Amino acid sequence: MNILSMIREDLQNARVHDPAARGDAENAIVYSGLHAIWLHRVTHRLWTRGLKAPARILSQITRFLTGIEIHPGATIGRRFFIDHGMGIVIGETAEIGDDVMLYHGVTLGGQVLTQTKRHPTLEDGVIVGAGAKILGPITVGAGSSVGANAVVTKDVPADSIATGVPAKIRPRKKDENQHLVDPDCYVI
Figure 1 (spheres, rainbow, N blue to C red):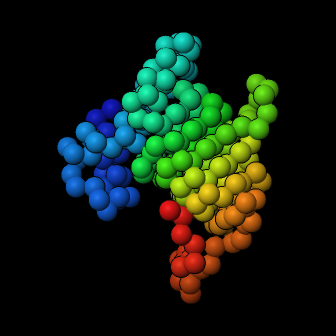
Figure 2 (figure 1 turned 120 degrees about the vertical axis):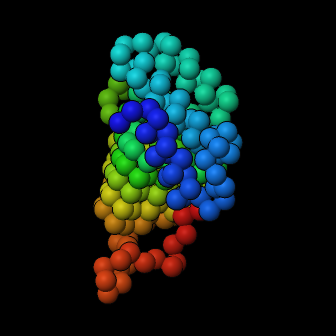
């Protein structure tokens, strides 16, 4: 996929995830989450090509400009959306799948000081509410949600909800057509 196609996909994704999104031109100019993602793609490419110092410098400039800190080593899939991104921190060994959404103040952090996999993996379709902290080399399974301000330190199975401090995990409810429904779980 070329750069223009990715930018178009990201802009369309912003319209899908944010009812306040008015148009592509405005979103491209004012959405700090989009800016952080676009610049992360540049820093990640530098990082994987061995240009670690320039990657870290550009990532810190991006942090200063957007309030979103994404380590250049983090791996991020397609259609990743950051809504109201201020205060987001994504660590070096974090892995984020496709169609993932984060709200402001989320931390994907580590718990150890060794050079190993120490940050979380978010599988496809995960939604993480404002202020949530997901810590350590754990996996949040596909289609799961993490509630606002939850602290998650254990794996979350696919199609589950994690809420509270420490997070309690329960399966998501499904209706008779196997569609996920959880009116009592709000992630923002």
